[in-house]
Structure formats: C-alpha cells, structure tokens
Length: 364
Image (cartoon, rainbow, N blue to C red; front, side, top):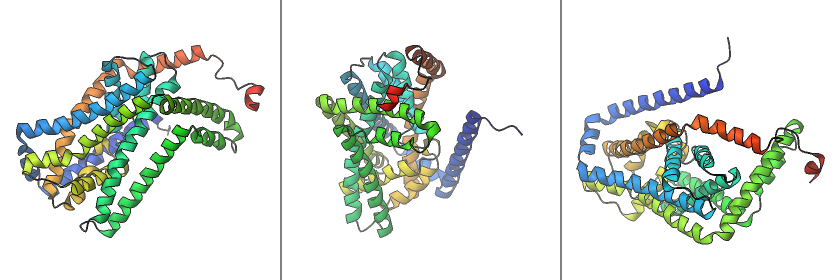
C-alpha cells in the first residue's frame, strides 16, 4: 500500500480535528440545552451584538496597527490595506490551527515579502518584535489575574497551582525573549548551532540556519536599541488589544444578562482564558474544546453553563467572520504563486546557496 502523502495526511488530520470539535460542540449543546443557549444569545439584541463585534474588531485592529508601526520603523512602508490584509490572513491561519497565539506568522512574512524588497530576516524580525511585545502585554494582565486567583477563595487549591505554574511558564519565556533580544545575546542562534554539532551530516544545514537566525536577532535588537519610541507606541496598541480581550465577558454579560463583574473576576477569567488558548486550542477555532472548558471557568464566577456557551458562540460568530475576510484576502493574493515566486527570487539572488560553504566560512 502506497504511503499517504504529507499534504493529504495533514488535510485528513485537520478534517478529523474539525469533525471531533463540531461533534463535541453538538454534545455540549445537547448537555447544556441549546434552546437556553440561543435564548441568551438573543438577549444581546442588536446593541449587544454590535458591542461584542466592536471588542473583536477593535482588538484585532489595535494589534494590526502595532505591526504596521513596526514595519514602518524598519523602513518597510506599505499601505495599511496590504499590511491589514496580511495581518488578517495571519490571524485566520492562527485561529484555525492548533494554537490561539501562533501559527500564522509564516503567512504574514510571505505576503509582506512579496510586496517588499526588504530582506526576509528583516520582515521576520518585525513579526517577532510584534509577538514579543504582544506577549509582554498579555503577561501583564495574566500576572494581575494570577494574583487575583491566588487571593480568591472561590478558586480550588489545585487550580491555583495550575494558574501559578502557567503564569510562571509564560513569564519565563517572554522574559527570556526580551532579555535575549534587548541584549543581543543570540541565545537562539547559538542553540541552533549547538544542535548541529552531534549531527555531522546536518552540521552545514544547522550552520546556515544559525546564520539566518543570527541576522534576525540583529534586526530585532536594532528595533529595541534604535526604535524605542516606536516600541513604546507598539506596546500601547498591544495593551489596547489585550484590554479589549479583557473586557469581553463584561461586554457580553452586561448586554445579555445585566451582569457586572469586578476587576478581580475579570482578571481571573482573562487569565484562565489565556491558558485555554495555549493548551486546549486543538480544534479549528477551538470549537467544542473551548466551550467545554469555559463551562468550568465561568462556574467560578457563578455563570451557568448556558451563559458560558452562549458567550463563546457569540464571539465565535464574529471571529469566524474576521477569519473569512483573512482567508479571502489570502486566496485573492494567491499564496501558492507567491511562495513559488519568492523561491525563484531567492535562488536568483543566492545562486550558490545550495553549495556547501567554503573553508574560510566554516572556520569563522
């Protein structure tokens, strides 16, 4: 029997995860009572639905503007339509793949590289800077939420330990990334080069990869060292994006149930939702998995299972609309054609890249 080709295997795996996700969602709607869920969604009315849509659109726009600022600070001056379309394409891929925060970055790099003559390492550097600053804004809210969770008597001790461990894990990696790029210590390129030492046949490949990573680290350090005003502005917009995500429960339950949460409750909900996106986003759009987890999360603030599922589905309706725009832009640009043209450009600019490096280069 012939082996299944990799693209087909990926497609089958993705289709299976979608079937599992929607099957799980069907089971959750049966368990919670789909009529109650729809009733709470209808209670939003038009004003509430517009407010829900605004929190999503404003959050996505704020994050997209932050990346546009970084691109301009690096001298990559493209129209906001191109940058915005590339950002939405990246958002769509990230949303539909098994991670709420990573996955679409290569799409961004490809779409921008196609419209710019900037080096690929510089384009990648803008994305890394945006992700690091975005992570920093998230961790600020997460640390506040962690403190609220530890002080809350409603959170079981076992969940407090999970929240504390998760916050420490996220803070460690974000902190190490900031330290590495701000100080240009090049830990990532050094680690890449080190990985090639025990593999003689792969040493040349790892050396080339380390050189590319080192160039990218230089570009990222350049932003922290020479574009501090832009970095500060990016941080402001990323904090705005995090704030709109932070306020989602308040917006939904204010319009659907007249419910008000205090700051500690919103902080707790935000933090647990971040961990949900990191560890349980394993179906397209988190369908099924997120609803199941949110039932438990919202129980901590005395919200019933119908309300938790209605909250999730209301926001998913808006998010899937944004995803559709991103996918449409990506298909309109012709992502396959772009990848081929970029490969041809790279080969024309570096015709000898397939050959092993010369002796002086290896010895340096």
